[in-house]
Image 1 (cartoon, rainbow, N blue to C red):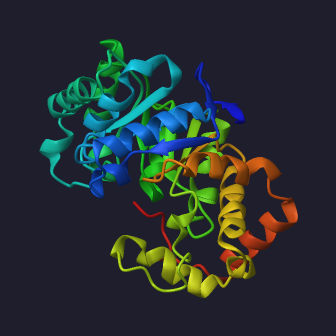
Image 2: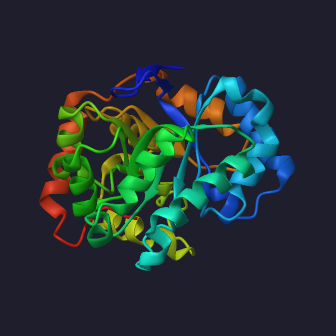
Image 3: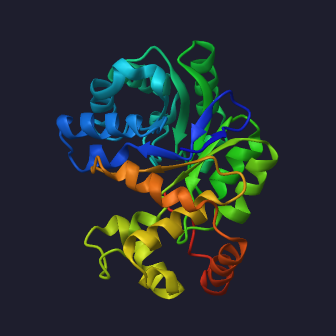
Length: 298
């Protein structure tokens, strides 16, 4: 699997990574997670991303692959994504979150700890950033990052405090391509694309039952990309290649409960970067249709 140097760090990350939200929120069994993660590592994937707020995701990941710690880079997040409660973002609370992550993941250190969608006004106080710096000084983590979207992601990049940015990038989520990604690239930050295939919201041809997917479904109905009418594997491949073809993107994290999915996704990427003409067509259509409400999805 292709690897890319992760910004200014010493990590060469695979272009596909594992996103740990789904296994927590959708109640995956430990047996499934153990098979899932070991099959991913066996397929060559070397990035696992999770968060203290993803129910029991960290605990299951720790039980599944703690014995293979040298085979992958381990990323997590502290805080509770989008919470406006200042107490969640207090220095002591964040440091406690990180210690919880270390315990649940059964590791002595994280390769990257990220603030989990800290609101802009709270981020501007500086206390949350100071918590991550202290965690790094204590040896809890090697690098620090911000996970989030929109104007807050742009501000996080501009602070110069972070080694990495995790943000939504897909055919249905392109705001960051102009708002923050060029700034992150200029600083040579590591960039993690979340929701890189827009949750494949078009896969059934019907509006998904889960409200989490509705924003992307609604946008795609207006965008009307022709390739979404193709075979599902082909359309997913094109969507994923679009995301990974964006300058400055290093890895795309995908959540799944299907152990066979990793080799399938790796196969989808063998065609390489998306031709510039196709990228331009997707971007042109976005610029024709998108309005100010089409912000990055947290």
